Image 1: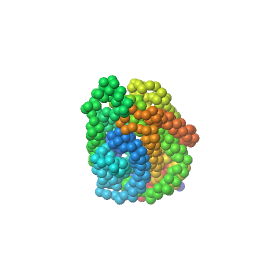
Image 2: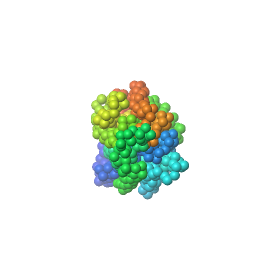
Image 3: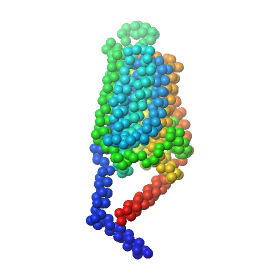
Image 4: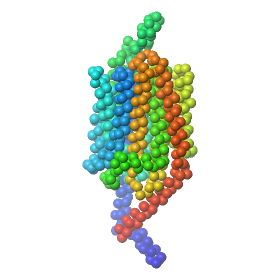
Length: 525
């Protein structure tokens, strides 16, 4: 019997080398070549991720300042726009994902039509966000409508783009390589967005409006204004600068979409849905029912909320509390450059010391500097040092969630081997919760400024506003970070468990591949 089995195995192996079966080998080679992505393909795919980060940085750092000081909206209405826009953005992610999963295959693919059709409208709505309409009564509706519209259209671009990873190649190695290119370009996109918006707007920063007491003080000192550019730069110049910056970003958005379309091709075989997707409520029940995922989401919910408060209010803090009205754009650029330069360090650190340790060190490293910036008297050099340190932690906050989410998905698959094809749910709901938290942070912070008596374009603010800004960029983020790290202590997936899960999943994949090879071999015979 053994001899017969051995002879059968020998004859099967011989079949693969016979001339008549060369077609099978050539087909296999053609399959591998078709799934191999060139460097050009990977770069084109990566460039498609830039618009999301560029527009996200510009909106995150500057929209609150723009609504308050340039559009001159009441802080209460600005808080409504920021909160509703972010909350709407959070809701559209799973909704668009649900619709994309049911899209039919077209001549240009299943994801590409969403990307192509959404781009022109997204660009138009983004541009109109930074336009001040020539009427007062409908301003709030204007900004709320176009902000929500842009968030919806950008989701129609970004969700299919994210899913495109699975459809550009069936080889995991090629996908991982393309994702590495994408992360690099996205990080650079944050720098580009901050630089374009900050530097263009910074060159046309309108002078502040002095209060009655400040006017008298200026007259007594025989000064015509608070700075020498008052007679040159007006609010209209600042508004024009915001529109120029948005026009440049819109141009980059369109160019990136064109590069993505012509440089990347979907594979029809990979684009076929394998199973019926779950409903929204079923998806929440599935992912939140997995303990490690729920804890990880809570950890990054609190830490992300901390950094979002810092991001959303730092420009106002620099302008009014620290008095660096003409330098805030450079301070923001230092934060993003620091984040870009230190991502490779955190990649090395988490590999060397483990991911939980990296979260603790990366997140806590910014706390002393958050305390320092509000305790030390206004000092530009100290502020730049704090900004660089904040960027180091921003890099950790940017990298580590996406590094730890695959571990949770692996753990879920080990514990639920019968549940397959739900990986995207873990990512989409993480994005949903973080975006919702972003809306809450922006809404609460702007509303707090309203209660504190914020004065639009004021040369100075009431002491209550200064205290509020200090709380929003220091005390509140530190508290949220501590809560998140306490929850992280209960997170059960350590390095030993993570490696064990990977080993088990690798064995399962090898068994599945072995069964597939045996089936194909039997069919050839």
